[in-house]
Image 1 (tube, rainbow, N blue to C red):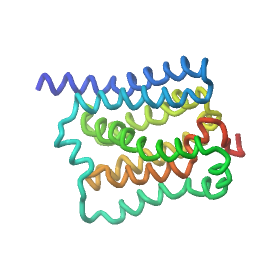
Image 2: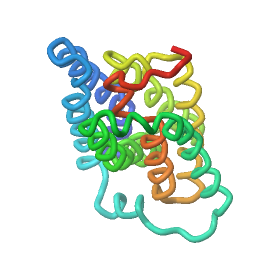
Image 3: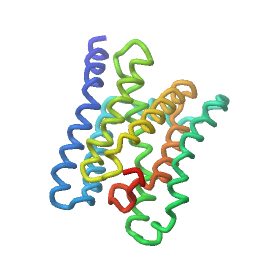
Length: 216
């Protein structure tokens, strides 16, 4: 019981620590390499997430995150729909893919890797381990820092990630992915939806300010 309580308190600090480490790296590296700071920032971000997941979950818990679950078709469809909305950004800016081969390759690589880390941490780890009694409190706490992580990490050098509009979309996505995880019991669908979002919103192109939303 004492160990469980201690781990619960650590989980309260976990998102704060991850954001502080990653944000600090963002400020430091952006001073020297500007927008390309996104690469070391991603490494520090994923590395700190990996550390928490590795030390505070079991192999069985991590396997369950990727388990195949039957049913819950409504939640699965809803989760995918959330991921489809940003694809309009991609389809209206396809010319960017031919303008920078390096950015395109990094964009695909980021979209393949990032959803596993972020969903594993913000949804899988925190929603399972936070010591709050209600699911709503866990979702709210995780969502708050998930939203803040974007301007504090990527927004240091990315204009698009400073927009107030991103807060609305992040709020919707986090709530849907969180409750989808609770209802489905697996992170497969939130991860897939997150992959679609990272593809559709031209993630790396926004990091490099090669794509800036028109409203900015």
